Length: 161
Image 1 (cartoon, one colour):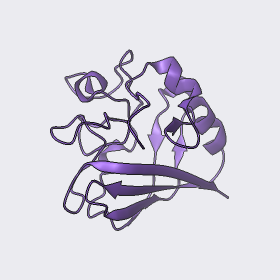
Image 2 (image 1 turned 120 degrees about the vertical axis):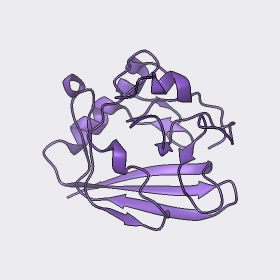
Image 3 (image 1 turned 90 degrees about the vertical axis):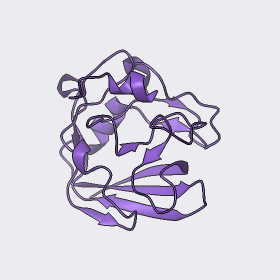
Image 4 (image 1 turned 90 degrees about the horizontal axis):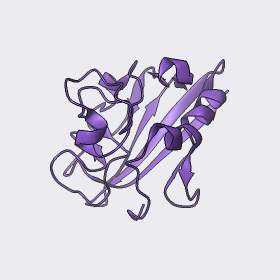
């Protein structure tokens, strides 16, 4: 990650994906749905924070619902060494972008956090936040990560059986 790709985007951009697959990239929620529907998939999130501490989180039974469900996130059991399951509250949440407020918070999380995500009251995790922000709650965030909550690198990997 280098901060050159803006992740504060609209629904259509997240639907079909954007960015450079060799650097900063979002596959597209429509493609994530097609990849994970009717299959048993696992999600692994690799994280490196601003202090160069590398950790990971793994979620069994990962899937993304179709557009009519708001690309609802479904994740199973967590394992890993991130210090806290920062996606725990995101399970069952709809995807929220700057032009589509699907979160359950009283405020519009995508606009408040300058990103797009399966927000649960806006906090705990935001891997599509603003890369240049390293304080407050608008950055690329994984709460309660050892030494710093702000990420320098994140990678989401999907493995389906």
